[in-house]
Image 1 (spheres, each protein chain N blue to C red):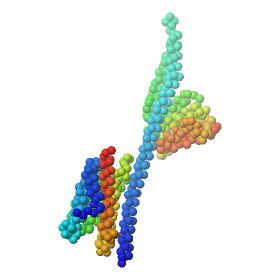
Image 2 (image 1 turned 90 degrees about the vertical axis):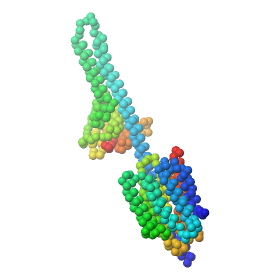
Image 3 (image 1 turned 60 degrees about the horizontal axis):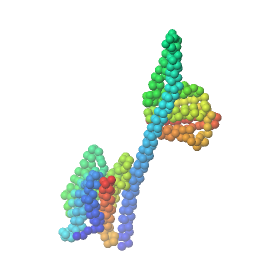
Image 4 (image 1 turned 180 degrees about the horizontal axis):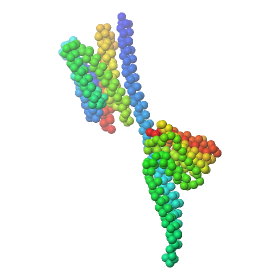
Length: 218
Length: 261
């Protein structure tokens, strides 16, 4: 079984999330456990899919991953956004529209086998916008004793924001990179970028999970 | 050809780093905004705590002043009248015929003592400041100073009287009381004027005496600074300002400006 280096961070974050489940519940982000589970399974399958199933690519896995993980991520971001009833309803409509587009794209537009780049772009854009909103709301809240740098929400959203930013650029250039065989250290630039971004994302998650646990202990 | 690829790679990486830089900058900016907001909130809270503390101290000082006045008033007026009545009554003998004039005098002294007690009870109710406007409370204080004798105190007012927040009114009253105490204790003044000017957003109170005055710079260095620092602090805590002008031989003017809300 092949494991890419960022997957160690990913596994570590899942392990921490399971161990610190009560800490996550205290911050109402227990949903992070199924998210990390889906992330881990899809990335492990993705890394080994071509070898195991003698397939030319692993896009099928990631297309399915986007369908499954998007509602979970949207739910997580909504919890962290702490919307009022009216906002919650609007977010629900947006989430339903996004999910409907993803399903339509998966079945009818780009199909199941080729990489669903529209889906990836839309998901990353949505995550980017939502994480910006959460961060802005965290910064502008009125609670006096709140400290941004020890807030798990801050680290999760900061990392999602940076990850989405890199993902969007990398996705935009993916075909160009592939066509021109642009590589760094013998690896495709796209994969190099995505692996680094993933490593940063899951490191951020690990930090946030530990912060949840520490603040629960207090 | 490899050079061109290298150039493209570098450009892509540069673009990504620039965008990442903006992303990180955005996060830092939000952190900074949050930090500033927290700091402002903390300062505001500290100011509020200071205000509350000062308010409590002011209440205690007013209460103390009230008790002192009450004790003096009972001793100097009510006590004197009742003592006189007692002496007058002690001179009445069973064997002697009733002196109606003496009884009338005793009656009038006891009545005056009762009246004094009633006015004391009415005027020195613990919360009397709350029920009166600042102008009424100051008028009453001025009556007391006048009763003590030796000083001519006048109160003037310009503009339409407006309502001041209760806490601010209490603090302002204490400032004026402190100014009057200073005049009585240190100024050797014969005239005091308390001038109220009601502006649209704030009230200006000016307490002016024609006493011996003092050097404001040296006074600050004196122990307690004649309570001047207290006056400044209190005015500041109400969101207002104060100024003290004095020169040896030229009297003293204390000006306090306090917003209504």
